[in-house]
Length: 419
Image 1 (cartoon, rainbow, N blue to C red):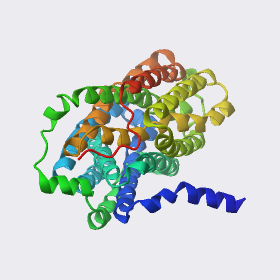
Image 2: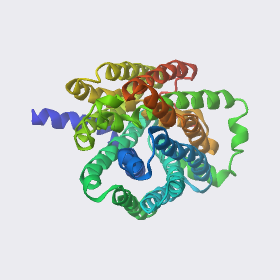
Image 3: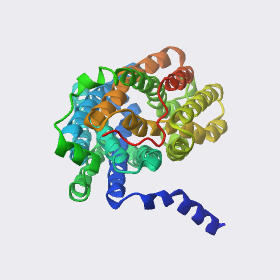
Image 4: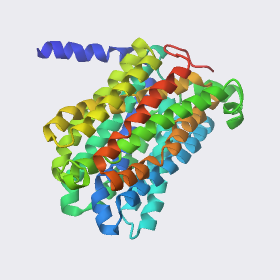
């Protein structure tokens, strides 16, 4: 049995042998950066009940704090995506890690809601920028046949970061409070030293930088032949992110809230036991999607995952009074509710040329995030009116919309990146 499992793992990672050492280091840097980025961001979601208690916020106000970070992440994604096109993918990645690390530390010092808003805004800049720089770094550093799998591994860092944040919150929040929890978020800054020493710029970027000036940026994105791709990719991102942020911003509160508020009534510490299997499912979903996208194509894989996510969300709304059923569905919700994100790093890289690839990935992905920034506050307001279970169930409609939108984009499986 153990031997078979070992052979299965070896087979699943055999493709890494076809990735050059520089590509493997790029993948690790982006994976680690995204893992730690996720941990810093999710710390707030887990601390919402404590922050609401200290500052007297209702659900809508707490949702607005998450919305602020999402809006600024859109700006950060575009800013650092453009910076990655100019100064390099690895350099931009290093800068984003520093930004979100010190913003998390600053959040711990907040004495008012206004100060917390300011620090969450800065953290959002790093959040959006890290994905833009890291995804383009990985996409340009691995062979076309394995791009989906590589992005899947990078994206799986979000689940690992969520798990790390969940464990940290369970250990720190009840004893030391949310401020010490946020202070732990400065630790990712140490990763920058390794990135600066060991991670190289991809050959595609070096060749373009040596042979031509930077591209025309936004003018290229909003003119033929890239205009339609820019608009459709942004619409896809907006649809799935509205569903995602509306759902997962409030999932920790849903587990912890009493039944009288439409929650599962588990309490803060017990709810962690439900979040762990959910994020284990998310980890598997990110990876499985990457392998499926390289095998079956980007479009059918996205459509399948989004349809399954909508169905699983509907199940959560119906089974709110059954903790065991919620536990059984948690890995499925994590698997289908997260896995489709692995498409963006590969698909967007394959849709746009090198001269604007960082900007295009940053703009499409993070503009979609900006358009979805109303989701936490909207679902929070709906939760105040109808309870958390009903509000969470409403997010499934956006997953269905995403499944329809992706059909408008070309299939790019196995495509070589345009210089």
